[in-house]
Length: 223
Image (tube, rainbow, N blue to C red; front, top):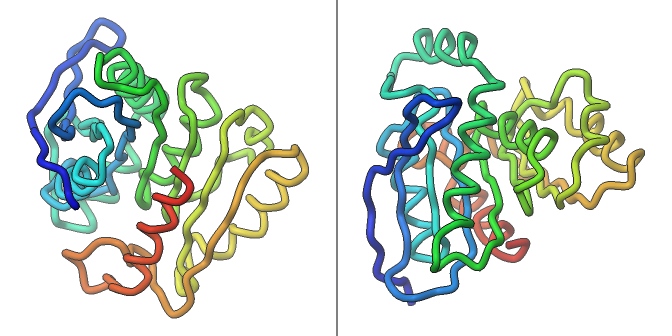
């Protein structure tokens, strides 16, 4: 049974500057596991807020950081420019701050994972590389770090979810698997057949219902 939830925009400080995020949490005393939801290159738009709420209804304390600081677009060209101009080091710091925000709450069980979609999938992996606070990472069809040997620093389990027909990121799956295996990391990679990039986004033509539902259940099993 889905839980009743509370939602709000929250603010916190990163490098002395104001940052914000969308928070969704179950009602009740907890303790709840946490998840930080990293947006696609469109920004903190309604779909990502909806995904954040879905996790809260499943019993997770969820926060989606606004790493574009208020910018949202539906135009692919503008989204590409926003993604390319993003300060990824700062974005990882903002994600890490969101993790620590959840862990500091009385209703938290102090376990927080990070899930990211597309651009957010790559940022999820970077968070696993550079943060000691994350307990699990779940990149959806995200790019691999460069150089890939950065994965040696990862200290948490990885569940990578990919699409068979994703010309940009599917070919890199063997590389990330080989690197994670080489360094003895705990990981699982699942490739969904007949699914395109962004198959989880139910506001886009790329949405595939079966792959989306299966992948969401995979996240829960791992969480």
